[in-house]
Image (cartoon, rainbow, N blue to C red):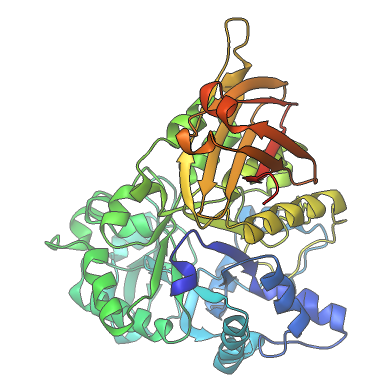
Length: 493
């Protein structure tokens, strides 16, 4: 889809919670079909290219019952929601009983209405696909047990936290190889040819309802990973990887359908080669949280083909809220980095308001939090700049940050430029708590023949000589966690 092709800006919404709050504000129940126009207008007005409605599919009553028996989950529920009640647990959106839009949200008709409302405003719709597992009450458990990793009565007796008995059969619970099994889901067998055909059919049906999918834990389906996790239980290893079969087959029926991978363990490049349009850039997130600016800069030296297909973020539903992780100042600097790099950028609903409580995805209600008006104003200014001067649609280049013998603070500076035929957008971030100075260099000869006007987000403008910028570099002096997002044009243009 055209507006998801180049550096798309994606807005993730926890659909059940969001609709609940809109309904309370409206004083009446709302569905996806009756979301007020001004709500969609507000999202479109911020410049988003797509909305990811997280959690629209039918959730599992069996999964809810299992989760209510987990002391760890109940503790997490009460951490996020001190007045938690059983009715607040509506089940995990990644414990899917059927790929049918939930009736509570308006069903398939409500989902179709939401997609149409987004399309009217030039935005696409992204939904979830969970390739690794399904709910214990999914129809396949009875109709196609061969689609699953199965166990024995001895497995069930010896490891009841990793196996479930259903209809006289024993099924393995879904898992990531590095963690205990998830007790509320059943493990699909990625090596089974029938399961692969069923996945293609499921995705083709989903493709008729949206413009792209975010594929949960996509790397778990890679042949090497799956074989390492399940060994002989999975049967014979297929010659082709799961995604190399599934993605082309879906695209034959739905050309242009977008695949986005939740990906970890440095497997992003491999998943890109197997057909994914975009993969999570968890490595950047970790470096922003823990590493020095030099490590972030090194990460950004990767090839453009790779970077163009990454998803940058500083929070999503699986990560803690950015305002609680980065702290005041650092949260803004991290946001500037994530939102001005090539590739897709993901913003999580509530991130703009400075919400601090990470909500377990099982819950339909979240605690009230006072919005951070200053942070919201910052995001509005930043998003307006990205929208208005083509900052995410031109040519991107990483720039050098130079110092001098008695100044090494330049090592804390990150800088890049977006260039179009009409304008430039220069981004400089001091990703440290201490002041930093340096010379931003590497602009090329084409800047030398003019005086340039550089206007920052707050309206502050600077006039600089192009010849000096080419020969010496552009001097910058930023406070701790300071940043420039400069609209760069010829003076008088």
